[in-house]
Amino acid sequence: MDTPWGALPVSDAHVHFFSYRFFSSLADQKKAQYATLAPVLEWELPGEDPEQLAGAWDQELTRRGVNKAALIASVPGDADSVITAVRKFPQRFYGYAIVNPLAPDALAQAERALASGHLHCLCFFPAMHCFSIQDRRVAALLDLIASRPGAAVFVHCGVLSVGVRRKLGLPSQFDMRFSNPIDLHAVALRYPTIRFIVPHFGAGYFREALMLCDLCPNVYVDTSSSNSWIRYEEAHLDLRTVFRRALEVIGPHRLIFGTDSSYFPRGWNSQIFDIQSKALYEIGVDAEAARLIFHDNLQRLFS
Image (cartoon, rainbow, N blue to C red; front, side):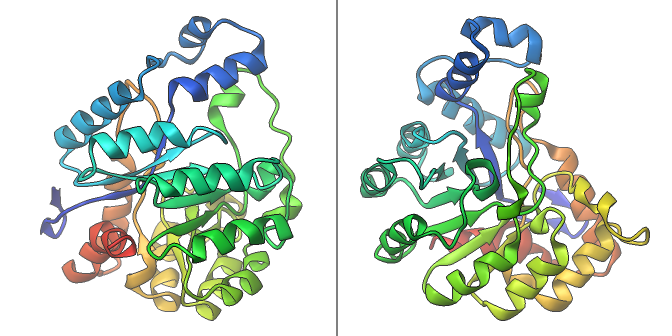
């Protein structure tokens, strides 16, 4: 892909795979027919076969010049959708899946999904499902991940806003008591072989995310989304300053680029790439570090 540093490979660590099952769960919550969501959202709704959606993302990434992407199954119980996508396009996708550790069958589902060989990461959303990352039920899932070298864990911290729920008028009764990255500190130390990923620079807990990464070398930060949490910080903080401070504390080897792309017809959100690459170039990041952030770190995470 063309970048301010010239041609560089680019991979995306954060793409939501909004499958048929994802939208069906929203329709059920809204007590509406599946097809009625499309005119409200003004989005294209996928068919029942996840291979078709995987094919659309494969074509979209080819068109945009993106090498690989991590697809996130964005509702618990939907791991099979991304497993199907990764099985169909193993050179294109990594598979992530959200798990709710409070669900009675969470461990069994995770075991089955990881046994497929096509799921690379379990995703925890503590504020969404109202649990502590230090809960013993989480520990059972982390024990499972620790037994599978190469798998990673994604932990959403900070502000959590699900735009599709807002557009559909569905409540988001999340609990931010469980959102602090500091809660992950003891857990990351207890599982030194697991690579943990905190998205969006901690989404409002930037200082805490930096502290966590400084103390735990197995914690990575993904750069995805518009990072609108910056508006909660000091007036002088902008994306360039965020990147500069992250590089000073964490270094370039544990920052992984992501967009938070999710739906069609927008497809891959190239604006996020443009904004982040511009910010990194303006603070003087060289081509070697840029390649780490935009491509190599994600590849090495699952090599």
